[in-house]
Image (cartoon, rainbow, N blue to C red; front, top):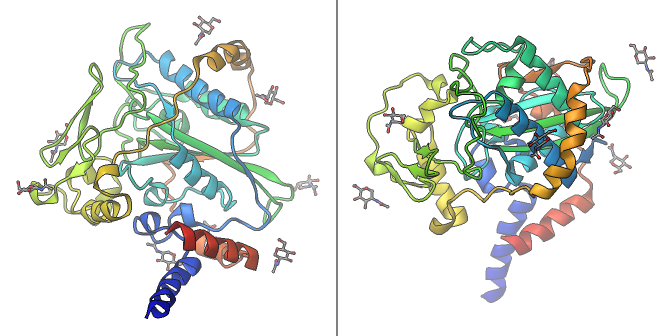
Length: 358
Ligand SMILES: *[C@@H]1O[C@H](CO)[C@@H](O)[C@H](O)[C@H]1NC(C)=O
Ligand SMILES: *[C@@H]1O[C@H](CO)[C@@H](O)[C@H](O)[C@H]1NC(C)=O
Ligand SMILES: *[C@@H]1O[C@H](CO)[C@@H](O)[C@H](O)[C@H]1NC(C)=O
Ligand SMILES: *[C@@H]1O[C@H](CO)[C@@H](O)[C@H](O)[C@H]1NC(C)=O
Ligand SMILES: *[C@@H]1O[C@H](CO)[C@@H](O)[C@H](O)[C@H]1NC(C)=O
Ligand SMILES: *[C@@H]1O[C@H](CO)[C@@H](O)[C@H](O)[C@H]1NC(C)=O
Ligand SMILES: *[C@@H]1O[C@H](CO)[C@@H](O)[C@H](O)[C@H]1NC(C)=O
Ligand SMILES: *[C@@H]1O[C@H](CO)[C@@H](O)[C@H](O)[C@H]1NC(C)=O
């Protein structure tokens, strides 16, 4: 009897081995980037801790510079980084879909900036920052300054970036670095909104340590407390009560991509199902987003000089970049997947991993 039971467990776990995509990702999107297969011979390039500080610093510098009244300080999120890495490793220089980059416990719009070919992260970020020459406040953003807009989007409080070195293929005859940054919140389909509200010069960044409020909650920038909607509760409004939802004022099936629609219509946009799944995976007490990484101020000070020098450099953009505004939806994950080379070692590893982790 016991043997039968173990046999049963083994079969369940074997299924995990062959469907190695964790439930919390796979149920958000069947083709979630977290589970995309790396392109053959793509080399992962995680950021070093110094690069991470640079990336945050450069973002926060730009955010500070615009003196926005509602501008928040940006922090690092490991889960965003992990998904960005998986996307970089596909070597498909295209955006994934918003849902495909969504972090399970943060069901908020998730934006993305991409770059390729730059020598290092500083250069890639400078490429995005250069777009500010064209920036026009409250103008419908075009791809011309959309990367910059994402960087200075007032509520983009979380970022996670990673890169991959991609081998020569297709029209690329040399290896090329592929840089990906994912952001919460994104500015997807918000192009008719200004990135921030004007403040007065010297206006500081609001620092709520990367706090986000879920399910249409509003972050009070003075107190850093979430003011939750009627149907949510908890410190981050992370507890959703779908039996209390008001009617959804939107009816188009495409509109869930827009920032405000899932917030106001969780049921309509699949967030109630997602919530039940999250409860099962993480448990009722662990639905809050993981705390972001808090930068050490000493490192920032050490870096300050180097970075201010680098800001003066004018670089020419050798390679194109794309951003979350390019609505071309990337459908070719499957074609990459079919080219994968999963060795039996990897399968074995996944087996072992899931046997002991589930
Ligand atoms: C990035 O590359 C440029 C150009 O080679 C170089 O001047 C700069 O020091 C590099 N930055 C970092 C942080 O490595
Ligand atoms: C790659 O292609 C470019 C132009 O298509 C060419 O100038 C260059 O020499 C090629 N590089 C290699 C390593 O083949
Ligand atoms: C959700 O709201 C309903 C109606 O107000 C209430 O009866 C129920 O207890 C709530 N559920 C939770 C989990 O709070
Ligand atoms: C969601 O939040 C917005 C802005 O705070 C508010 O105007 C709207 O009424 C809220 N919607 C719901 C359904 O709570
Ligand atoms: C960075 O340096 C500038 C002057 O070069 C100074 O005004 C600013 O306060 C410094 N920032 C930090 C975070 O140390
Ligand atoms: C997707 O793959 C198809 C067939 O391989 C190809 O024709 C198409 O151009 C690809 N699309 C993109 C966006 O790469
Ligand atoms: C996921 O990719 C498969 C092809 O591998 C495709 O048939 C399917 O429609 C995709 N699913 C979603 C939800 O995009
Ligand atoms: C798979 O990768 C291994 C090395 O990791 C390589 O030796 C082998 O040729 C690859 N197989 C295919 C079909 O590309």
